[in-house]
Length: 383
Image (cartoon, rainbow, N blue to C red; front, side, top):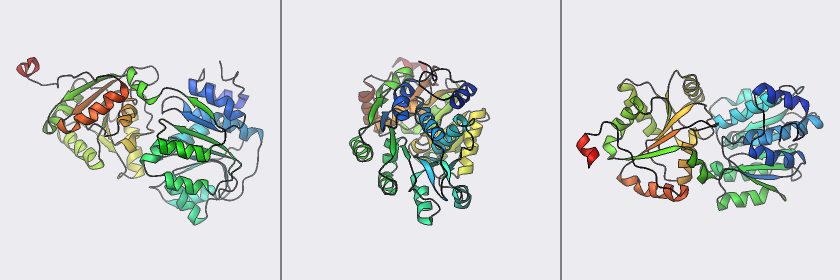
């Protein structure tokens, strides 16, 4: 089926053609018809499946079919996103898909930057507001944002909202939005608390689902290196100088751990950058831009910072620390092998992390093959 057969209008089809999109992804095929009808949608889909277009395209079509003026501080569509990076990407997608629609106003708000510019952008009202929950509540308290005119609410990456402690703020935000609305709810996984939130927010939703989280791992060549904690930094350096010479994303469990790894690599003569919650928005954007452009081929990230990063051409993911939540492993390694490409994921597992590895293998229903660390003497390899 084509985008045209889904019933999308010419301005959207023209924008999709300009972006080089030729056919809908499975989540788009499932979600767009229901969303165009005005139904609530509950979707199980993760980053890389095309879910942003699955909600952005029908929303833009509904806005175009019923133009309205928006009051000061108001918006017709509210999209809630867990991270700054994802919020920025969603806003850019709305602008790209809507570039042939007349007068479309899209703005984004998140923490880490001054509120004044965001408040000014909202002063005349906008069609689409993409926001992180914490900063949105700040603006609601300042009365620079009014949610009484919201017609469509989108909650993206709901399970990640749970990880970040955003469920209470989300409930507070939703209490200010009209009950008569369309709600589109997307999550990569559906733990009980997220299921409860969906139940409270959605009315008779259409259920759509693609690529359950456990199956994504099947598309990535995976390895694990068993080692002592003290050897991790040296083995990481050897991997980056040898097998993982491409664009590589390295995951640590903590922000300070990320900074320590960057410092070690740079002292060893290998340029690297870190992206995590303690970095300013400017620092995060520069690190991402350098990684995208190839100026810096190694990016060290925490789970929270990396969720929503969509960078093409990542050849390797290295788990410097194994995550204690098995689903995070699948999200991490899903940063490679995107859009039909191949990718490699290598995990460094010390003695204390073996329980985490068992949890991961249970989730993906497979044993992760053990590989020998580069630089290991021949006699140890034989053993």
